Structure formats: structure tokens, C-alpha cells
Amino acid sequence: MPGVGHILGLTVMLEADDFSRFESPGNYASYCRCVKSERTSNKKKKGEGNRKNGNKYLAWAYVEAAHLIICFCPQANAFYQHKKAKTNGAIATKALANKLARATFCMMRDQTMFDVKKIFR
Image (cartoon, rainbow, N blue to C red; front, side, top):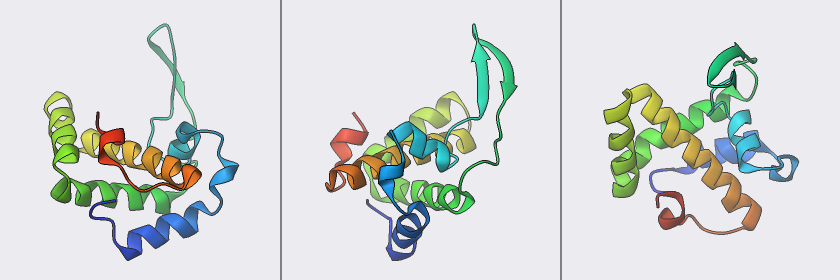
């Protein structure tokens, strides 16, 4: 991924361990703390789950990767600016981190290289 160096790459690789233990990209993103821990029904909030569940080091790594990819990838920067205009910077960064976590899962599962066209359509 653009902007992800040796330290972040090794952190993701060593903390995630075996990607086959996750059923889907959403499960991996949840483990990385890149999604909200909220239960809703009929568009009403019914409670929250354990928001501290998951790997805090992966959460850190993907937020750092999101900050770095903004500088090196114009498509990621456009996505970030679009989200930031609708909400705020923290939520936009976390949304970008979610996309990166999902992309990493798919890259590791399929043994492919990073393709910016697949992640930012």
C-alpha cells in the first residue's frame, strides 16, 4: 500500500497472525477496531457491544496507515476529504482505516497486490 512502510507492514503481519481465521473482511475489520460497536434496530440505537474488543495494535497501525496513504494516494485523499466534509476528521480517518483493513484482508486472502481501483471506485 502507498505510504505503508516496514514497521506498519510488519505490525499488521505479526498481529493479525493467520488471516484464514477470519470469515470475511468485515470480521477482520471488526477485530482491528475499525467499525462501530453499536446495535441498532429499526434505525434506533439499542445498545453497544464491547468496544475494547479486538487488537489495539492493529487499530493503531491502520489509523497510521490512513494518515500516510492520504499523502501518497490521490484517490484516498479524495475519499478522506469527501467523508470529512460530511462528518469530521476522526470519523473520516476511521472510515479510511476500515477500507484499508478490508483491502488488506482481501490482499492476504487472495495473495494479490494492492490495487487502488478496487478499493476506491
